[in-house]
Length: 131
Picture 1 (cartoon, rainbow, N blue to C red):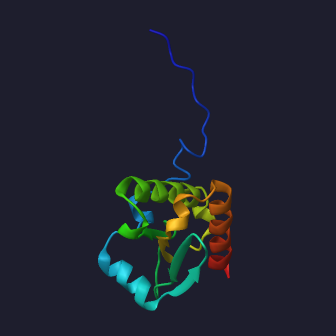
Picture 2: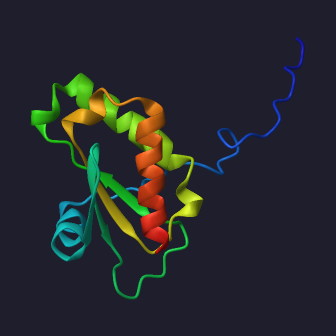
């Protein structure tokens, strides 16, 4: 039996850039708070709602949720959009204010958007989160 070569730690295998359950909005009550009280940011590919809950003591980072309407496409398309956006945000979680709750509502154009353009729009969102 041979030992497998050790894999050097990378952001994807050492847990540094994980999108854990603590990083996600899961409850409809939390989504409703963000929609009702948050500020709106829009671009051609998605609408984002940003909300800073009062007196939060979160060290795990921001919480992000996705709501993708059926009008965007069938489940395969909706899930592809969600995976693409979540992966781009996962790599940039440390750049976002940890006290924020963000809900992303992708538009139909996100399905055909080039990854570079989608990434550029998400970078604009992160800049907006810093301001």
